[in-house]
Length: 251
Image (tube, rainbow, N blue to C red; front, side):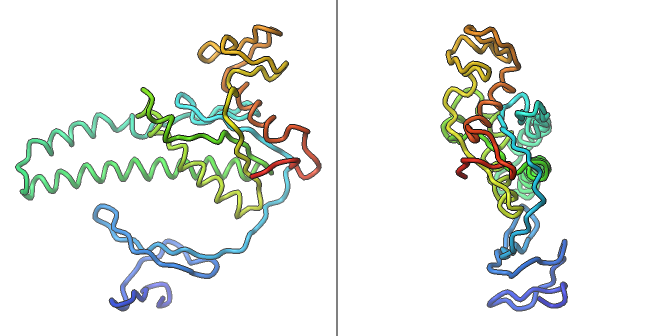
């Protein structure tokens, strides 16, 4: 690296590069990536853990498609639907591609426009994921979420909506930020979290009716996703929390 202006690439030499920010820690690997029409140098650095001050708070997070996330604290995070809001634009661009002659420059340009739109959607979704993850990590010592097999869930009739929210990518970002901040992320079994009453523990399918949860045993009423988020936290910290906000939790 030449004073933040050039990078040395094996077999190529010094290449001009615009750094968005200074590198932190010790660089370990360098990957050159082509994203549509832009080249990026992606560094992987070894950075020491910088623990955040303890908050004494723990939280369970239930993810969905109507709301991106619902926490056990009662916070409902809006789902921005990045792909859904761009579908009309994508359809127009894809029709343009289909009308262009294969192998021609005009078709190549049209394909590039579709790729740029998808890139904007991907970057917007990633930025949203980072912001939500940062907030959760700053405010809580322990964060619990369901250990979802997204590849199985995405085969349902909600495949497009599930792909749009990007649960897997969000959980990866959340774990990375939690690890660097000295926080704990717990993955819990997802079975029956939406059917179990948080108040009395009674579990049956009839407890939930869309977004409304009403226990047929004790009569407890709640928003179904909020009830699920409380159950998720309860599975992660079944015996309560100690002074540091973590007890019997396995990441």
